[in-house]
Length: 84
Image 1: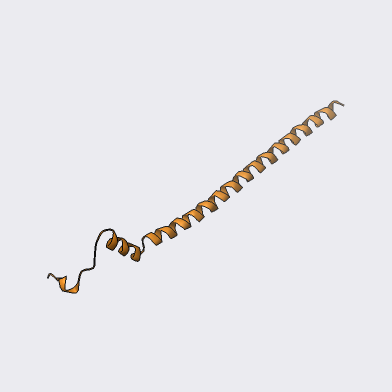
Image 2: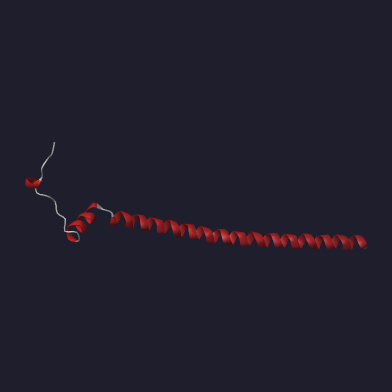
């Protein structure tokens, strides 16, 4: 009788340990899934920012800003002097 109670107590302890480890596993898996989603979102944002950067640093845009906002212009061939 006493042996049965001891074995039953050990069974309860192992059962609770198993339930606790399953709970921790599910929590960790949920956190991993959330972090993976954040990783994908950040990669998408990085791609969008890289595209935006390439658009803003294109030669045509720089030339447009230089001529319209800064009043720059390409020199005429007659005004170019080569110094040796």
